[in-house]
Image 1 (cartoon, helix red, strand yellow):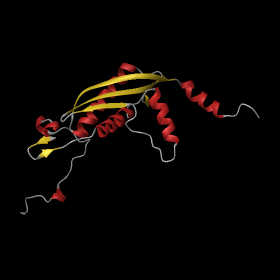
Image 2 (cartoon, helix red, strand yellow):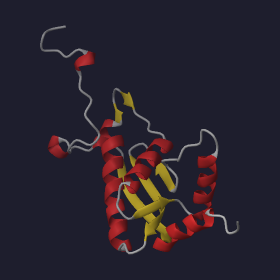
Image 3 (cartoon, one colour):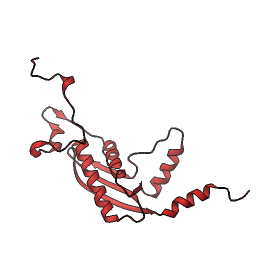
Image 4 (cartoon, one colour):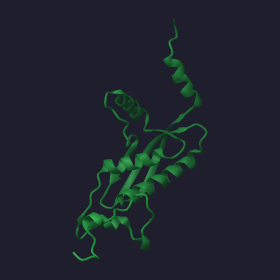
Length: 162
């Protein structure tokens, strides 16, 4: 190995949040090459999309009613953790992905603006972290979180009798 050649341990893996590549080449071209294929599991894409959607201010919760109820039970079970992919369904091909997101929004937030921000963040995160081209992000707003919902949860926890 000459001084100009890089050792495998010296090769820097780019951070998923770094800027776009120079020359504008598609990262999805890197997934299928003469040297081999890179397959990315649907669960991985769903987790990335779910985390990206949660980053947007105004998203209160992810998932429809049944998914939230099941998730609340699972979260209370010993060792249960909140699923990063709750409320997210994906379809993944060799070079492309389609994403469906279900969410609950905070009251007072502009739903069209929120949907646009979620869509942009999901596309950016999935494309940067996986190299897959996102063909669509469909967003379903299933509920709205009202401010009094927080206060009613607190009062219901108190005993009504002495």
